[in-house]
Image 1 (cartoon, helix red, strand yellow):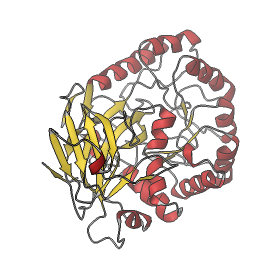
Image 2 (cartoon, one colour; image 1 turned 90 degrees about the vertical axis):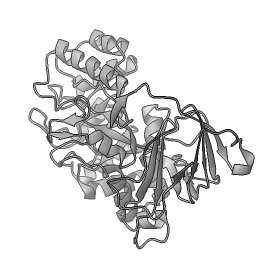
Image 3 (cartoon, one colour; image 1 turned 180 degrees about the horizontal axis):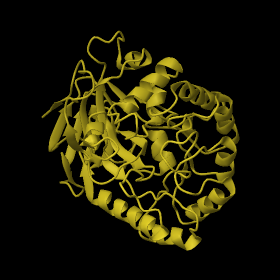
Image 4 (cartoon, one colour; image 1 turned 45 degrees about the vertical axis):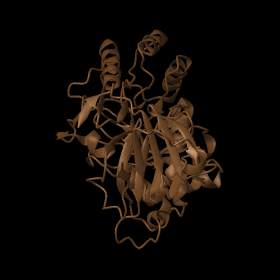
Length: 395
């Protein structure tokens, strides 16, 4: 169900009897705590039930020893307007992603809008409109950070200032428009950065008409903040080139569902070998030709944990705290003062894993029992994941 962003405040919420608390912090992925207290949509306390104030709660949630983690963040989506995607002629795709544990989405460009304007006045108008629309409207309660213009030849620094002054904080994928050269892209990235706008560059072969190959040399020269879909979207660069990007760039390493899975594993392993796992973030790159992937982030967590042999609790950080820090978001981490966006999970029924983390490391996605955004319950048992063995109870 889509609704306006200005929802009722949560009041005081107590989440207790947590069996496993994933922090989102890659330096300390598991917290020794069993209770979270929320006040008006923000985390007010984290600790043992006996040590925190649980009195006079408006809502109490008994987790029944299930897992609580920060809400998942999809670092790479292509929204249009509302909860509709013309790419797949599908309604309610964002709400469906929420049932996959996603509480925040970040636009890499509203490129699928039919008749998308490519003139400078039009592309700025579209970005500002998308930013305003999704600020005011949350499908399924999901926070969609939109308004990501695809840069075109002829843009000057004042265009970026105008966008920033209007509230635009993102650039769409560099390479989806007419700017494809490293030198030209680098100039615009610097202008964007100077005005507080974060940039993402397309990596790999073309994905839509008008896009083209963006190779490792262009990515390195452009020096965008996010190496977008480093494993291709769809077509990846050679594995050696991807590993070179991980080594020579200090920017975020974004791995997506809608890409080359073999290269995804190689990129994640390279980041660990280079001792920079904090740079890895996850996205779906949906909706796209491969469709809408409601469980795309969970599937990436299971893929990287099981086939790249990375502990599941660390991979969950790729999809939460890493993204929050690199994207400068007030969510994604279980910390006092952060947004109370949570996904409540348990091992799927009849998985071979004896615990949630073990089941993910065996390649199974967990079952979601509840999703909370800003302290408000947005769904209970997910309609999209396999059924969780145990689910929280709201009192």
